[in-house]
Length: 168
Ligand SMILES: CC(C)(COP(=O)(O)OP(=O)(O)OC[C@H]1O[C@@H](n2cnc3c(N)ncnc32)[C@H](O)[C@@H]1OP(=O)(O)O)[C@@H](O)C(=O)NCCC(=O)NCCS
Image 1 (cartoon, rainbow, N blue to C red):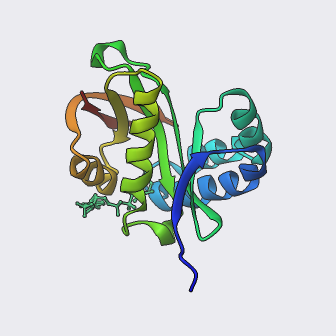
Image 2 (image 1 turned 180 degrees about the vertical axis):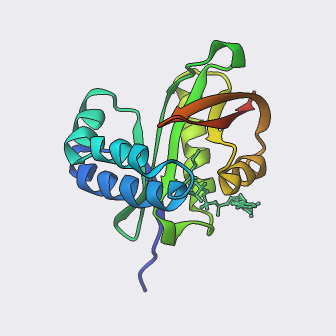
């Protein structure tokens, strides 16, 4: 009998095409109807496999979650960019293919990313999410995050609220 396991590992160049596909599908599913169409298309257009290949080779802060030999999600992480939040680490992005959402993979990759930040000596972490992305807010609350601050971001003139969660 085969045992099928999920594994979180640093992304490599060979993951670039899968990362581009996960990015495109998960962002379309999360943001179509929220972020204006043109702005979303431009963001997606920038992140082709070549972009991901460079990101993996130069920044090395991309992790993938693999299930049954296939990359099904990713997270990007590093230094917190908002000093006022008073934490050292940040998860910049956390996305799963739509068909793999809601069955525990998000918790798995979040906890691995948090451990990786801690291993780098970074104390505490932050995550930003759009306030209209209610499922993501419920997820971060489920992970024990505290909503601590809000900000805004404009997409083609549409100003959207975003919420910061922190783990001390
Ligand atoms: C957000 C995301 C990463 C969460 O991953 P997931 O695999 O769907 O979540 P999990 O199944 O691991 O859920 C983990 C916990 O959060 C809770 N949770 C997750 N989504 C929830 C929701 N919409 N409402 C309430 N609780 C939720 C679960 O009940 C679960 O609790 P438990 O472990 O105590 O049972 C994933 O759904 C995703 O990729 N969404 C689209 C992209 C996105 O919005 N990313 C975040 C951008 S900031």
